[in-house]
Length: 160
Length: 84
Image 1 (tube, rainbow over the protein chains, first blue to last red):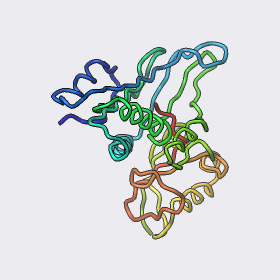
Image 2 (cartoon, each protein chain N blue to C red):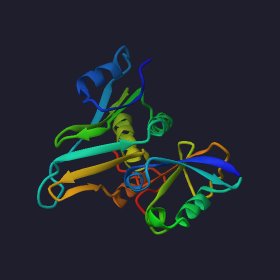
Image 3 (cartoon, each protein chain N blue to C red):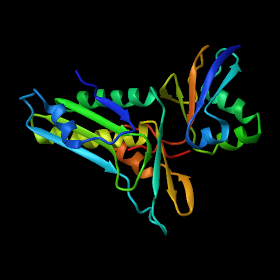
Image 4 (cartoon, chains in turn purple, orange):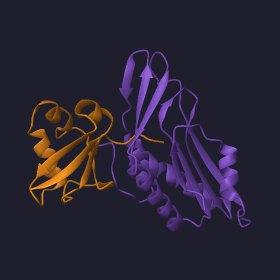
């Protein structure tokens, strides 16, 4: 049985990951996937030339496994896979993949969104952007905490 | 006294290094550990200050200030997470 969560430096292949996820499961009627990518515009002058991603080896994988367990409790899904890259990334590079299979699309759509909302505020990763002005750690967003609250989860992140 | 391993990440790691061993009284909480580190002054006080957004983990699970430390515990201090 393949792993549900992989943290890796290498790029991932969406088609390969989806095929592996739904392989041998004839009950799958829906596959929903999300890919997050590195923007090359940070909203100020000049662009992002590099993005560095740090994680907490051991804790990060375990945290995401827990989120997937919760997704299986809440939604009628058949499979879930999260791949998240770490290390040095370039503009337009893929960062994260969340893929979910189910019999019918509604549950897969919801579970995929749930997993992304949960990961954004509770998975131990930290991003550092490099722009012409130098490198700076990205700030967490309060809007991501609000997205998580939609699912009835009150764990915070951004506030002091 | 008990010994705990404290791991720092991101901007905290840049200021304090990735790891240090700290001796505390048995029954100390994560919040009290943070306050003890702040009391050292210097960079510890600057980056761990109350009012700064710092999250904590105990044995690789997110925790609150009230979590109680046992000998050999691994504590993480880090900024709000920004993955995804």
